[in-house]
Image 1 (cartoon, rainbow, N blue to C red):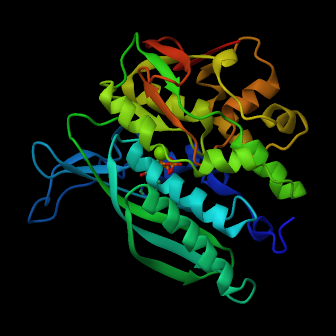
Image 2 (tube, helix red, strand yellow; image 1 turned 60 degrees about the vertical axis):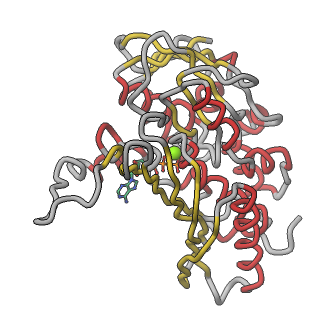
Length: 336
Ligand SMILES: Nc1ncnc2c1ncn2[C@@H]1O[C@H](COP(=O)(O)OP(=O)(O)OP(=O)(O)O)[C@@H](O)[C@H]1O
Ligand SMILES: [Mg+2]
């Protein structure tokens, strides 16, 4: 077990400590509609903003072939190892650029650190993890901001580019398309177990620290136009957001959804975060579950940290977990 258990300094955990989806939408309601330019007008055309429930990142057009993608993400420690936490947080922040089909160019660190409680040397290892993952993505880490705070938090703001006609948008999914998921679910329950017991799940760490770059490139190459990444709102929450924004119904085949080893056992043993339970509550009214058992519902709602891409289309080598139909009575249907 790690000598200093970073997860014990966090109340919540990773993407599971996001403000619940319903509350966030209430908070942001009217934010997009009220956005009128000042006297000089806008400096650039906004291609993707908060309309329709928001997307993974904001996108503004530069010209006919290039647009700028911008996003930010930071969260408390999800694992005890500082270097791994840094890698995971960076992969997660970069992921929102990949979720738009873009290429990250430069990032700046966002760091909150309880200076009296934790040694600076640990913070340096967190930043090192972030730097190593960003470098592997070909993305500069060229600055940042640091804050003394009661709880540690780390992440990045990332800027990238994307072709304006080849983005993976939340609102461009169409009936008849398959749904592909590029990483297995279960990081939420395994992180919750890690926080409670100190057991290390190396395969979950490897999955969270892995970039969504290849999946994103393959999707864009395959002509996919709609997608998102599966993070704090779980597969169900993100599938709902995609279906709602596109005006379609997402049909998920529960048995086709891959799980990390040990995820089902962790869920059955009760290592379920508050975030996951709130996800399930949020989507319950929008989802037709049939007779799907509670554990399976929780796993489909499991709040992921640095999860995979969910795209409307096929990516060779990744499982199809459902398909899209014309809008039915519910935006999400789960078949057992
Ligand atoms: N404080 C905020 N002000 C304005 N918009 C916000 C704020 N917090 C979240 N949003 C927007 O709400 C939407 C949903 O946020 P969320 O963090 O779930 O998206 P996300 O970045 O794709 O998440 P993740 O990083 O977990 O993939 C996004 O469009 C995001 O930009
Ligand atoms: Mg996202």
